[in-house]
Amino acid sequence: MSRVLCVRLDSAGDVLLAGPAVRAVAASGAEVTMLAGPVGADAARLLPGVGAVLEWCCPWIAAAAPPVDVRATSRLVDDLRRRRFDRALVFTSFHQSPLPTALLLRLAGVAWIGAISEDYPGSLLDLRHRVSDDVPEPERALSLALAAGYRLPAGDDGRLSVRRPLPEPPAAIGGPYVVLHPGTSVPARAWPVQHFAALARLLHDDGWQVAVTGSAAEESLGVHVAGSVGRNLAGRTSLAQLAAVLDEAAAVVVGNTGPAHLAAAVGTPVVSLFAPTVPAVRWAPYRVPCVVLGDQHAACRDSRATTCPVPGHPCLSEVRPAEALTAVRLLARHPGAVARPVEVTS
Image (tube, rainbow, N blue to C red; front, side, top):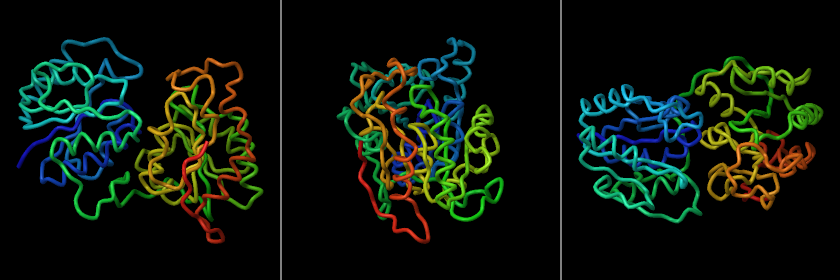
């Protein structure tokens, strides 16, 4: 049996977007190991087809980049060498180079390495794949797997997915509910918290139960948004439990952050509050009913800014809670409503 290492070293959302490519590798009968960063490792464990997960904080990929640690890097190389991988695919975003990672894999004795690279790779890559950047991230990653000779099995439509069965949610939420996820990985992608709180009240008045999710660090944010009308689950779910909460939701309202892609992976409609700092064509929730809200032609477009450079953060702050409510009504899975596919809009 071939041993293949699939590498995706950044966030949970990025790892989920590599899921179809990983399934294609696993469909070949290969034994698949995923090398992921600390914030992506739990997502890697949710991917169908992954047999084992290795964790390493990469200093040229991680958002809060640590110093290069020679001993930690040497331990990684030694561990990879012991595992004797036959092949490796290095998945990256358009702004990341796979070549430093490929160098470590060569030092670890990996004989065949494939990646998408605009830069000349010398002897670091056996497959230097090139692809248009204006394609959704899951398709970009899948194109690398296809170029390496891996195909999705019959019946696999290439959507995002997670392992099932999912665990029980941390608490019963009750009748039809909408999830609000106010936290984001960077401030430039955040909808104002007061808008989230107002939307919670509007949803409650519209007859919905409201669940607010987030990390442990976002617990106070969750308390504020939930107020007296919602159920605050921030800090109370593992990633797998969050998937379970999203799986049962009628819709989720969320920024461009990992839970948006987790919602897509369980098939839940998404109201995406999308700052145009990166292109929606690449990063919007993939192949689920979705409405994108936010000015996609704002001055920050394609800047990859982490803090909004425009006073007042108008690309998102000008999206009113009533607009988000309308989008929820359009998309939501509800016994009394008819949900239908919706193209990404701006």
